[in-house]
Every structure is written in C-alpha cells, then in structure tokens.
Amino acid sequence: GSRDGHGDVASHRPERVCLHLPLHKLLKDAMAAMTIATPVALAGARPTKATLSRRAVASRASTKAPVSVARGALQVRAAIALDYNAETPMTYNETGKWRENFDLAAWASEVRQVEKDLKAEIGEDDVDHLNKILTWANMFYYGGLAVLFATPFLTNAFAAIGGVNPIAAFMMSTAICARWTMVGHHVCHGGYNTAQSENGVVTGRFHRRTFAKGVARRISDWMDWMMPEAWDVEHNHLHHYQLGEAADPDLVERNMKPLRTGNLPMLARYGQVVGLALIWKWFYYAPNTMKEMYARREREATKAGEDFENPFKTGELPSTLVTVVGGAFKGQFGALIETIKCFAPYAAFQFAALPALGYAVGGAQMATGVLLTSILADVITNVHSFIIIATNHVGDDIYRFESETKPRSDDFYLRAVIGSANFRTGGDVNDFFHGWLNYQIEHHMFPDISMKSYQKAQPKIKAICDKHGVPYVQESVWKRVVQLADVMVGKRSMLVWENGD
Image 1: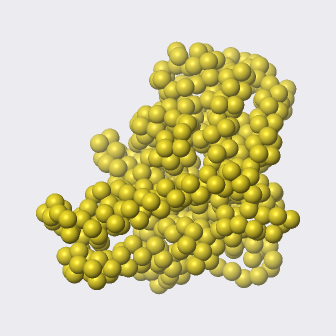
Image 2: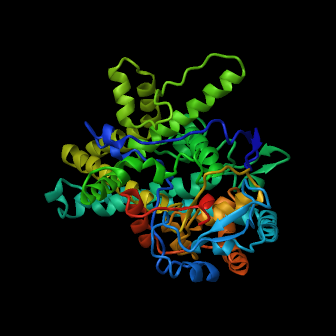
C-alpha cells in the first residue's frame, strides 16, 4: 500500500467507490434523501466576494454562465500534468486561465518547505494547546450539565416546554462537536504523533495509534455516534487522499445527483437539505463509515485468501439507517447488529444514563427535561457540524477531478488548495467555533500537523498561492452554506479540472 502520512501503511485506493445515491427511491418510507457523505464535500456556487488569488478573481469576474457552457476557450500548452503528458494541449476556459503559465514544481517546492518547517516545530507547546482546547470543550459539556441540573431548582422558566433547557443544550452540543472536529480529528490524523512518542514508543494520550481505540478509550477520549476506527477508514484514507475524485465518498455533487436532477419543486429540495442537517451523523455517517471499514477488512481478507463477509450489503451505494433496517426485514441482521454496537456507547450515555441521573435527582419531570435537552443537544451538534463540515469542498469555485493523483505528489498539494475552501481564520475563539475546519486548505495539504501549526501555515500558504496565481478560496462559512445548498439542489455546479476550468 501507499504511505498515508500518519505513520501507518495503508492503501488509499482499495477500490473505486462510486456513490450514486438513489434518494428518490429511499424517500418512500423515510428521509433517505439525506444519504450524503460527511465530513462531506457537497457542492456549492461561484464566488461573488470570496477571497481568491488576484489572478483568479480577474479571470472569474466576467464569468456568469454555468460551468458547462463554453467561455471563450483558449488552446494552450498544458502547464500542469495531473494525468496528462506535459506536451498535451489543454483547452482553458476563462476560469482556468490561471493555469496557462503556472509552474507547479516551483509552487510545490515552496509549500513543501512550509510543511517541513512546521513539522520540525511541533512539540510540547502544541500538546499544551490541544489540552487547552480540550479543556474548553469539557467546560462547555460539564458546564452545560451543571446548568441543566441546577436550573429546575432556580427557576421554572423552561417548565412550559417540558423542561428542555436550550442553554444547556447549546453548551453540550458545542462540546460534542469540539471533541470530534478538533480533538479526535487532529489526533487521529497523527498531528501530535511526534510529540507523543519516542523511538517508536507511544508516550502520551494523543497518539493516533492508541487514541479512542477500543470501547474504554472511545468512552474516555472521543465518544460520538461514529466508531473512531471506522471513521479513520472513511475519512483519513478514502476521502482525504482521494479528494474530489470518483472514489471520494464525500463528493456530494455526484452523491446528490438524483435530487439535483429530479422533478421535485425547488422548495422541497431545500427542505431535504435542512432535514439532512438535523440528523446526518446517525442517519448516514455512522452506518456508512462502518460499511467502509468492513469493506476494507473484506478486501484484506480476500488478499490473504481468507473468508470474510461485509455485513453491509449496499455495494457501491452508501449504507444508511434505512438500508440497515431494510436489511433486517430481509433477514440480514449483521449490519443492524454492528450499527447498534456502534451507536451503543454514545446513545446509552446521552439518552439513558443522563436521564436516569435526572430521575435520581429530581424525579420523572427532571428525567424528561434531561432527555429532551440531550435530544436537542444532538440536533444542534448535527446542524453545527453540518455547517462547518459539509461546506469544506463544495462550490462552483471549487474543483472536482475525473483523474487520479498520488498522495503527497505535487498534484496532491495543488488539489488540496483548489478542491477546498477556508472560512474566516485566526484566533483560538474563532477557530474553536469553526471546529478548526476553517483551515481546510492547509489541512488537506498537511493532514498530520497540529491545530496550532495550521494557524501558522495559513498566511504562508495563502501568500504563496497569491504569488503563483493559484485560486485560494476563503469566505464566510455562512456564504459557503448558501453555496452548499445551491449545489445540493442542482442550482449550481462545481468546476471540473479536466474540462479546462
């Protein structure tokens, strides 16, 4: 296999996963239109005031037609290989004129130097910073619990709504999101490995080899709907090293094709987007990450001449709660059993243990309030994470790719930039509420560095991109949400590298 940059050897192209979600079929009995990959890379819209490189802004200023329309194409020599021979002519559209004389090797040399310098600086200061962020998350969670349990003794303000405490729900939801997007995410990418190991021996808590592995460590390190080992396969390998390609499980322009091209009224399409945001982690993401993990184990067993059967029977299609339950009605209980085991730690604590504690403290009325608040917290954290994750790799100013590239190649670094979008960056408070996903460009270039390193990297990478004329998309997360929704419903489309965009 290929070296994945996390210190482990893994294959980044185990199979060509091409997901075409038949939402029109799944919607018969449930909101199956919400089958979409996450940390998703849905699709969005052409920028209006996005922060792009100066040359990219100039070239796009006059572009108002859809991507599929020819826009004064120019025949030039291909400046970037990306699966093309260096001498192959390429037809560039207006949006692709920045590519005409682009020196990929020179640009890549500069960004590689940034990566080298940043990795050399990772140490205890970075671990201290991670601990600070984790402390913030814990303060939000346990502070939320304190508010939840104390409020009924102080005021009856929430009694009229069944004891649901929106303040506590917001605090708890923020913590749940933070533990995933900042702590679990960066640790499992290996961002702290060098500071948490010595001579190949793990010396600290935040090393990807041990973090959140097994039930006990999952409960203490990162407890969510997803199983960390399954998330590692779907996100760290399939999505991260095949960004925007056919094998990227999070390429939502393709995943949402039935909705984009269907006959539903536009208002109903947007309604499905809203519905998905409310439930996507448990409805789609957790079951599908399990499917990808077992698919990988099945491939490894086949190579070793052993028998292993993936209990998730959806083939190229993603697994969702609908397909899991549907399989059980057909007598196929394997996927249901594995999904229940995946859900159990988080669901048991949030929706059973906490209400039970509420009952012990304040009886049935408090237990009901605690349960409803926990449900509200889960809905809020679904929406929060959807907003900061689903928007990362979508927009009609963002590229997708019909060809493959190799991990850590010059092309790989370039695709990380032009296939991603940043939000407003800078400052721990701002970055905390963005889940540190506002550095998505730098993260896809250098997945195995610390959160603190991304703050250092961002202005350097942007300056290098400006210098070489590489489009660098940075825009408010709220504007990116509009882009995301518009592409999900078919109103806008992404740029395609091989089309000369």
